[in-house]
Amino acid sequence: MDGMQPDYARSYARDTQLADEVVNYRRWEWNQMYTSLDAQQKATPDDLDVYRLQADAYLVNSAYPEALSQLDQILRRRPDDIQTLAVTALVQHFMGNSDDARCRLSHLQKQSPPAALDLQRFIGNTDADQYAVYSSEPRQDADPGVIAVFGQSPNPDGTPSAGLLTRLTKAKEMADRFPKAWIVVSGAAVRTQYAEADVMRDWLVRQGVDPARIITDDKARDTVGNAMGMVAAFQQYDLHNVLAVGTVQHLPRAVTTLKALADRYHWPITVDAAGGGEVPEPSSQVGERRYTYVTAARAAGLFELDDFAKYGKR
Image (tube, rainbow, N blue to C red; front, side):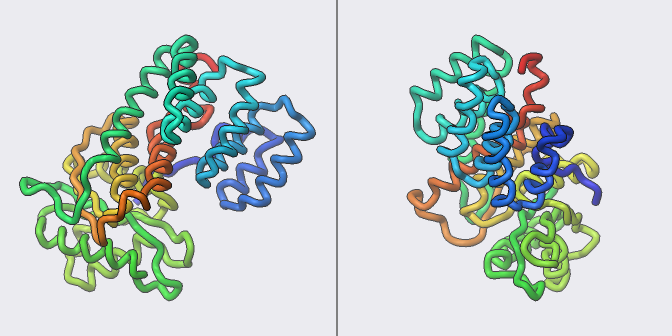
């Protein structure tokens, strides 16, 4: 299916000085990108978008102190920059630096009350969604119109990996339990030549699932891409009651990101979830929790420079 896909670093794609680095970003060629941006910072230290793009890459790679260092370079030069205030307030929030987060949010409120309000609402929703209880079972009264299955890389030979099989086994269980529900399988060819969605569809069909029920999104390279492809399918088929399927460990990020994306595009959904695998220890989830804020902010349109153009002040 032809769905929306994240256009990473789009805010800088038209900048002749940064266009090559945007290409590196989209290819995930991080070392080459970091080396080039470091050189550009030394050559043009007042080009703020160089710091933004570097910070963007650090955030998607969970290098949060490094991202804050880049963004604070912008605030030293432009203290009222609303995108930087918003993103740094968010990072300080999920890093547990509450006083600093409140200070930055307060300054954002003075510069752009609508941006501050949207950020506060986003943080509240993300806190609630990702810290909800996720388990192997949906609610007893669940009646989904669609089962949304988040992919994972298969084996190099195109067979389901252990992690993907965990998701597929749960998806088959839910498909049998809710025989009238559509099934969206989402995932591109990321680490192998085989698209995750194709591997999932073929496995489900071999297990007896009617292929006519299955909607394939083979473009998504990450959780934001999953959400975009899924919401496009929901819109196309007029679907609103969703059962998300992944591993129990991944479900908080998957559900939070999916809901943020649907809210951004004003598509009303209710989301239940069922996960395969074991419930992880909370201590092992710290990094995953932090990264959820990053993916959800990207999905919500509260991340890139262009996202903040709607507030009328850079």
